[in-house]
Amino acid sequence: MCKNSDVVRPPRTVRKILIAGHVGAGKTTVLHTLFGDQALTTDALHSEAVSDNKTTTTVALDYGVIDCPLSNDRLHVYAIPGQERFQFMWEILSRNASGILLLMDARIPKPLQGIHLYLDRILPYLHQPVGVVALNKLSGVEREELRLPPYLRHGDLRLRLTTTDVRDREEVLTLLRLLLGEIGQRNAMHDEFSLGGIQHGVP
Image (cartoon, rainbow, N blue to C red; front, top):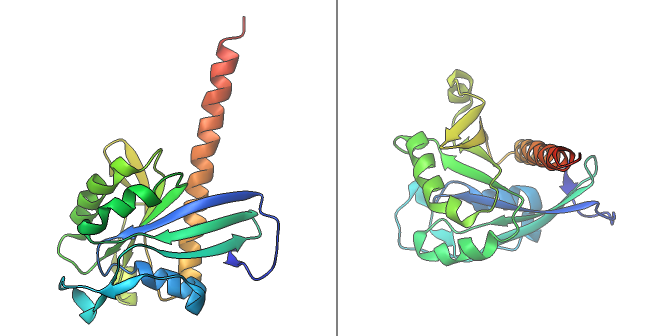
């Protein structure tokens, strides 16, 4: 289970996690749900019309740190700007990122198409991308009735697909656990191929 880093614990692994998505998808809400007033945010007034009467947007980053005692991971969580005019921050913040949590407002027209369009824009900035895609802002009934495949295919990339309510702390922690699981699988595959390459060269 992940928890805020109130207790000093030597981290075994430090990971950089990106929270991405269009304007109004719930990125800043994730940080407030996890860290409350301790979250570092850079919200400012914006001119783009979005749902929920949203009047502010992230212009640089939102940031917080959380520890996961069971896996002994320390996660540095960065919410990146949603507006395209702040794309230069995507390149800066994506350096050395371990994985990405992509949020999508499920109420927008054709949300799955929107996910693919967003991935086309952000993937060039990511090295060895590992990710979880979460549809946000669904009612409880809508979530029960929705039948999603466990993974979303985007070209050769396979991303874990789920729904969430980012106002619920336990649900956000579940998303982070899913992402850590995907990162672990990617690393295990990488180690397997590396070992296979070494063994292949032995006479």
